[in-house]
Structure formats: C-alpha cells, structure tokens
Image 1 (cartoon, rainbow, N blue to C red):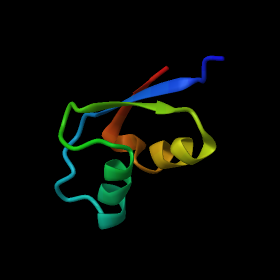
Image 2 (cartoon, rainbow, N blue to C red):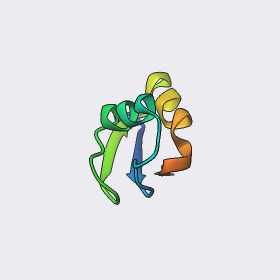
Image 3 (cartoon, rainbow, N blue to C red):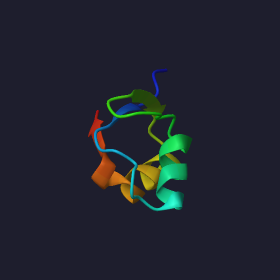
Image 4 (spheres, one colour):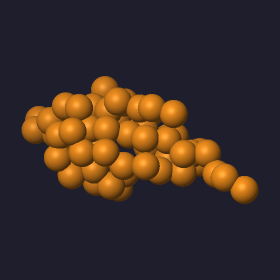
Length: 60
C-alpha cells in the first residue's frame, strides 16, 4: 500500500527568522535554500509545514 507523500522545498532564507521556525525547517529535513525533502503526509508534518509555510513551496 502506497502512503501519501508531500514534497517540500525551502524557497526563502532562514536569516532573520525565529529560532523555533529555523528548528522546524531543520526538523523537516531542509538545510539550505532550494533543498527538498519527500515526507509522509501526516498531521504532525502538516502542522510543521503550516507553521513555516511562508518559507516553503509544497507539492503533492
């Protein structure tokens, strides 16, 4: 059975953002601008994406 996946890409710099937002981006597995991660679509991941949505591009 194929689990639902979501691809997130960091499109804005973390310079000047809150420390909690930087930690959330790191928790999503993103390191630098234009890095991407393929994550399982769970409520926890969705909450992290919503918290830092202004920094990310989300597909799928």
